[in-house]
Length: 89
Picture 1 (cartoon, rainbow, N blue to C red):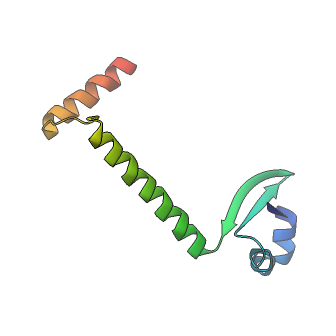
Picture 2 (picture 1 turned 180 degrees about the vertical axis):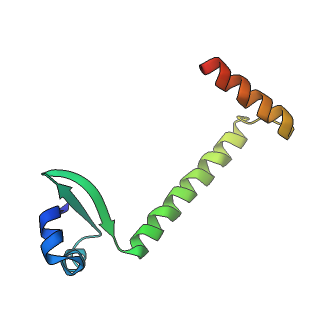
Picture 3 (picture 1 turned 30 degrees about the vertical axis):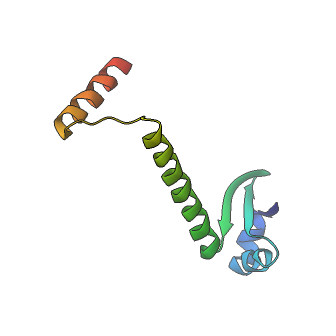
C-alpha cells in the first residue's frame, strides 16, 4: 500500500500523487498517521465501479433464481416499507 502523508500532499501537491500512481493503482493519504483517503486514477475507479455493478447483478440473479423476491404494487411496497420502519423504531 502506497501512503502519502497530508503534509507531503500539501507541500508537493498533485505531482506527488501522479508520481506515486506510476507504481501503484491506489495511493492512501494519511492524516496524523492514520489512513484517511484513497486516490486513484479515473480508469481504475471506473473499473472498480464496474466490478460493484457486476457483483450486484450477480446477486440479483442469484436472488431471483432462489425465489428471494416479492411481487407487489407500488402502494403495497410503500406500505410494507413504512410498516417495517415503524416496527424498527
